[in-house]
Image (tube, rainbow, N blue to C red; front, top):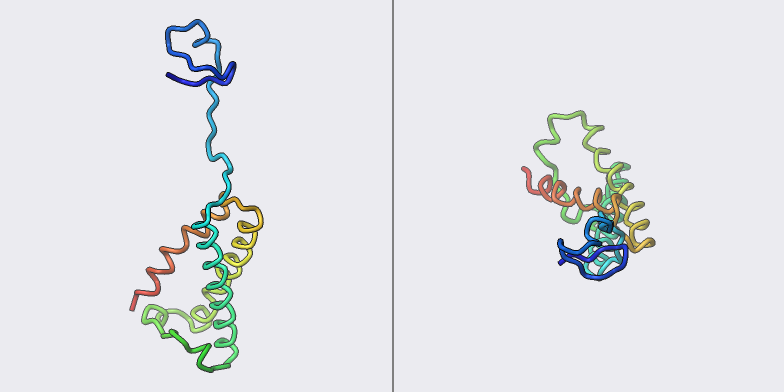
Length: 130
């Protein structure tokens, strides 16, 4: 049994309306965000904001307990120019902050939200690298 758009009735393949009806297919239809996704994007926003502030303060030579909390140097960063290691996370943090606000305002994840969610496993991988 398939529901068709033309009359909204349930039809099977033997009815005359089967060939004439058009099947309504919705791909990536916008849906309201549930509470779990909202909490995830709020967490990403807060973490990205904290991390951006921490990185900027560290890059400008300001050190205190809040800035140095859970911060360590990575071995993989030593093979690059020190300038690259200092500023490598800043563009993605700015992107995450802006997109998280857009997603929360629209209450729709969409393509931008998916781009932010794809980054999460990548950053977790980088945290656990030596």
